[in-house]
Length: 123
Image 1 (cartoon, rainbow, N blue to C red):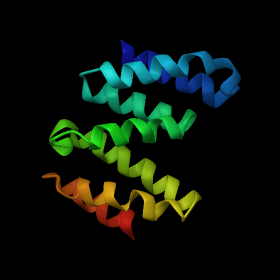
Image 2 (cartoon, rainbow, N blue to C red):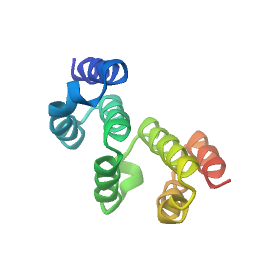
Image 3 (cartoon, one colour):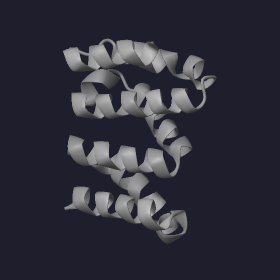
Image 4 (cartoon, one colour):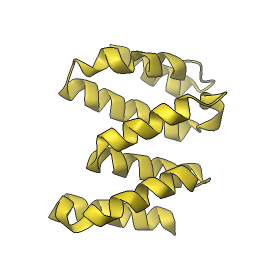
């Protein structure tokens, strides 16, 4: 249910702009922090990144400080993080050096698709 609500908020944002969903950003961040379902967490991260990427990156930094961050994230979440980092680095190449450590941490994943995406993100 929450997953669908998040995607509805994102659709509203894409069609009508930030002014309409501005009051939802805190709720999306709270869902991202508290949700245990990986696909809902992924959707919340993607929406938060597209609406306010600094908050999403701040959340990512806290996740990466966990004892075993890669095990905590599922591969679908890792793939979405890599996709967003690649997008961020393409828009602003100076960001690549700031996020290289994150990409290298994700290369410890057991998922071959995550490893492939790490390599393509570095390139």
